[in-house]
Image 1 (cartoon, rainbow, N blue to C red):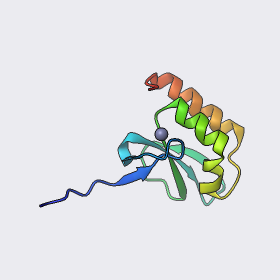
Image 2 (tube, rainbow, N blue to C red):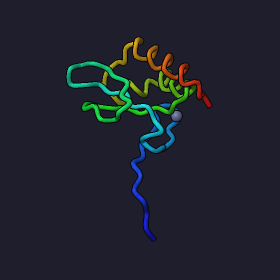
Image 3 (cartoon, helix red, strand yellow):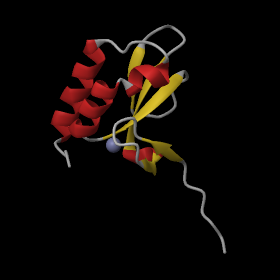
Image 4 (cartoon, rainbow, N blue to C red):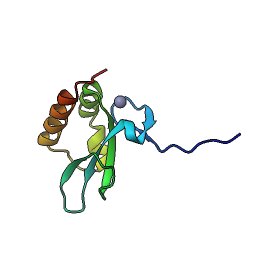
Length: 92
Ligand SMILES: [Zn+2]
């Protein structure tokens, strides 16, 4: 049996494993910036989230993004993410 290797990452909100390309990556760069990384290629410590506002809210409540990034994510980043998800309009 051949198992195809698909890079899987865990959503910080719902704890589901999903394909990397199905998730949003938030990166804390070595320059101490927070970037919503759509290319998935930025260097730095990253966390992943579903394209879902529910997951964003859950992650915010649980502070799981802060925990994964080992620092406090600024409100502006949450706002930027919420805005982005609104534009995508594919909340589940
Ligand atoms: Zn999720």
